Length: 176
Image 1: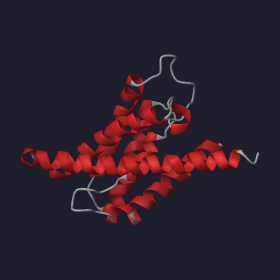
Image 2: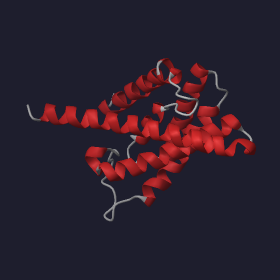
Image 3: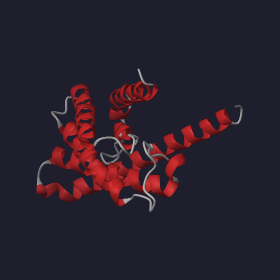
């Protein structure tokens, strides 16, 4: 089996368990709830087929729904994020285009690019998730506030993970 497929599979399972066992129990003032599992969608290769991305996004969200008993809310939001991802990547493409099979990340694209990219995808995901959860227009301001606060917290966690892996890879490469 390809090394990257194994790595992606381990990341998929680890993020599901991290979300279900730990992060679903984190809630601050009913506004801040991190949904770190979206990190899997963020790190898919740039040349990942959009149709396959929709399937992966659906099954990622469905996995969270099964463990959280949320009746498809995460499946809808994650599939929407996977749908929007190619458009965001096209909009944010460098002038010379992306390198073939490049994985979006701080090391490859820089802090500003990755923060913007991750922030857009996370905000879209969270808005759809909380809108489906509320499912009425009367709570639109509450939905916007909750999605903004949770998006900021999730983005901070994503950037911390990027920082940890960036530093650990730098220290490992200095010994080689």
